[in-house]
Image (cartoon, rainbow, N blue to C red):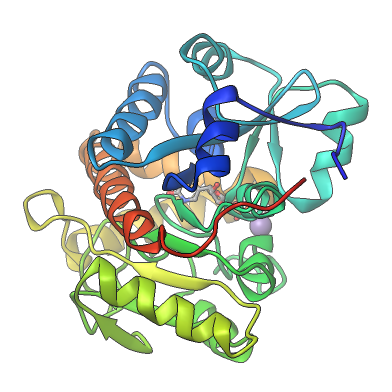
Length: 308
Ligand code: PSU
Ligand code: MN
């Protein structure tokens, strides 16, 4: 049955119909994660990376209260310049719909919307997780990873989070954490964290086979693929740690909680590193888009189509 709140772009509708590989892309990174104009450039560059690797990009967002899967360039521009834009995770969809708002979808929100139309592969920068500032601030992303069967390609979780607690949560919820060509869980800006992944896989084909084996057993959880930032753009753990500690202390002092916490920490860290962390962030996003497209191409033998 068609849901009146969801609209596919003609290109995505066609791709899903013909079984062309599709990669979903999130939009909170555009609306809340990056400053202007880098947000628009990044959105365009991620789409181009996906196309260059023979898949079709489906940026997911809300425009005037409609859930949109696949945006035109003009719509990307609108979203990137939009103010009073919502950050949309599971609980916020209906808010955006009834108030006819624009919104950037988080990892959880993007997974939710894209699985409704049968997309199986998704690229993002970093997932949300358990925050250090409050043990009760656990991202809906973790819950979505436990419940939605998709391949999610990320560069790990940012060291602004409590990484051991985040990994424990994923283990409890039965989410495989794949290290792409690594045994170590990457920490977003850094390639190292001192923490282990649950399995190492070395090629897009191995990832596709792994996910199919996981789901064939009847598992419903996502497969989280962690792809370390390229060496040339990485910032070492020891260099990042004091910046993160400072941003985190400021968040506590200024009583910044909930949805505002992640964007606050990201922009403070970017200021503290004089833009270096921003460049790293952009590089890893593009790197993840590339890998996701290659994985989607390997998945194309399995049917991606599902009616909405
Ligand atoms: N990590 C980033 N940049 C981001 C986010 C995470 O490097 O913009 C966004 C993602 O959309 C993620 C969301 O899903 O933050 C998590 O927010 P919260 O912690 O409020 O659940
Ligand atoms: Mn949160």
